[in-house]
Amino acid sequence: MSIDKFLPHIPVMPQEALELLRLPQGGVAVDGTLGLGGHALLMAQALGPRGHLIGIDRDLTSLNLVKEKFKDLKLKVDLSSGNFRDIGQILEKLGISAVDGVLLDFGISSFQLDDAKRGFSFQLDGPLDMRMDASSGLKTAAEFVNTLKENELEKIIWEFGEERFARRIAAAIVMQRAKAKIIRTKDLADIVLRALPRGYTRGRIHPATRTFQALRIVVNEELESVSLGLEAAFKILKPGGRLCVISFHSLEDRIVKNKFKSLNFTEEGLILTKRPWEASQEETTSNSRSRSAKMRAIERIK
Ligand SMILES: C[S@@+](CC[C@H](N)C(=O)[O-])C[C@H]1O[C@@H](n2cnc3c(N)ncnc32)[C@H](O)[C@@H]1O
Image 1 (cartoon, rainbow, N blue to C red):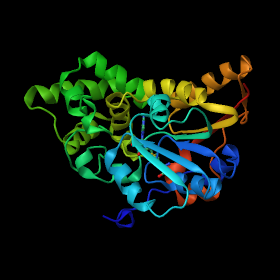
Image 2: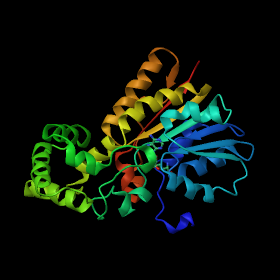
Image 3: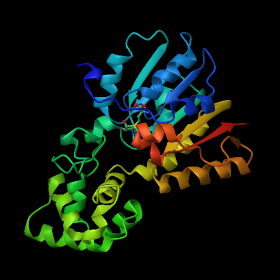
Image 4: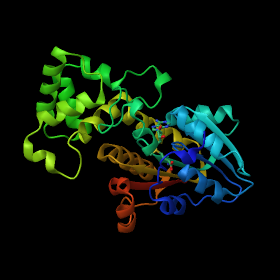
């Protein structure tokens, strides 16, 4: 199976990531969110043929596609399936104790979004799944949607989706599931659409975007992974090593900002981005996904 058959996931702010990571030739670096390997390929080029690149992704399908794509690279490449919050253990298994750089590019890739059967998309009908790693034992989105209490659904949609009509949507879900279980993405998208006031549907983003995002975050325990992952990634940096993070959600970015601030305060790290870097106008025009990206980086001092 060739990776080129799929719509490419365009890496966000690639040159900025390279600039902040400042990887040395012959160094060791980790891409903790390998995706389809867009950033990783650039990292591999920066490390050069004597370098060592480790790629981690919890999505086995993506990982296998990149294995094929990277098979002819000259440098040493290790690709592992797993959660980046376990980066320490993953590197230990590979016999690596410290690295020059780590990149974390949160969220999902276009490849995952565009595959209807993964259930991430409200535009494609598929099972309401949303797990990045189906073997993880995590509950599916359908399980959450059909079992959570109304006030719990409202809280999730409000907090993680930042959806102001969370109460209406939660009520509509509970009313609908009393008639029949909600198990398809299309059904949920229709429920959300009907629950919203008319004018609200005219915005730039699809009205179900926020609800789907909220569920995806909960299903994959994304914010827990962000907190634990930052901690673990910083720990495995060499002195002078750098961690570069791209967030797409204000809650993720807040976790990153606070973690970096505390590392800066204790003088373990030096923040390299006083304010988060954002994509250029040129990039946001050609890649809409980059519009909400916030990039932050920190260097380990000791
Ligand atoms: C935005 S995509 C990364 C795209 C990649 N930078 C590229 O250029 O192709 C995010 C990827 O991170 C993976 N991912 C998300 N959370 C993860 C986690 N906690 N541990 C490991 N991988 C994760 C997703 O499966 C997805 O493939």
